[in-house]
Amino acid sequence: MSPTHKRTRALRAAFPYTIPILTGFVFLGIAYGYYMTSEGFHALYPILISATVFAGSMEFAAVSILKEAFDPLRVLLLTVMVNARHLFYGISMLEKYRAAGRKKFFLIYGMADETFSVNCAADIPPDVDKGWFMLWVTVLNYCYWQFGTAVGAILGSMIHINTEGLSFVLTALFVVLFLEQWLKEKTHHSALLGLGATLVCLLIFGNQNFILPAMLVILAGLTLLKAPLSKAGDRA
Amino acid sequence: MTLMQEIITVAMMVLGTVATRFLPFLLISSKKPTPGYIRYLGIMLPSAAMGLLVIYSYKDVSILGGAHGIPELIATAVVVALHLWKRQMLLSIAGGTVLYMLLVQFVF
Image (tube, rainbow over all chains, first blue to last red):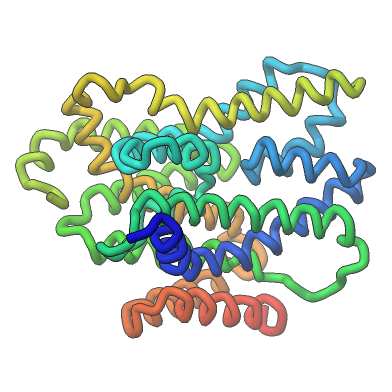
């Protein structure tokens, strides 16, 4: 297979997986670009922040952070806390991304929630190059977000469509990818632990502070269950 | 903030984000064989992380106020049912999203 052929084949396999993200990211990107410029920032702010930070929730937070007093250390700690869930994605993708050679740098840099979930759960056909598939998913999603942000920042104030509820497209994506993962695996201990621990922590700690406790409970749960689950040959 | 302070602030956000994404790859050496515990986590964590992500995407739903999460519940049930029936990712997602938009715009 020629290198060009390999790339286009992977692109054709990857693109359909990214269509829901195209919808969701363009919509949310527009919302972000519009929000930041309507708060008095020049259009270049959301555009450059999207291109460099590339982490949705922190980008929305940047609008208020940039209006507060200068405190770089606090911002660094806040960012690490808000994005701590990426640590789980990294551990999950260690072997898959390392096998992708030099592509791994962009794969890791662009590992947003949506990109992780597709690269983690997608059924890549055996005749498609895995590295290129994952790279295309990452690049396409990155581009959708940049495009949405730019449109929102430059034209946002001229667009008036009733899009209430459209952001559910990303929730539906996560549900479908979770189902795909569920249908692929033999036992569901880990999936149920992830759902249950996070739900309980959300109810106890509220929607601002539940991620870190949920991660700790999941980690503790998996550690305690290591012996029985390893023996059961879970998802082997 | 001055422009320089703004640049440093954004740089901190970049650093914090990049750190959470790269840290596992930097801490766990690719030259030495991956420790058994980490390899176990690498196999088990994806399902748990996807479960976390699902709940995370509902975090702003209020059960006590507003529509009590009913539109989310109905739309999610439709997504799951469509997916188990046809197993067409885009159909399940589009069907659930359109229904959700109709529910929040016209019904609730």
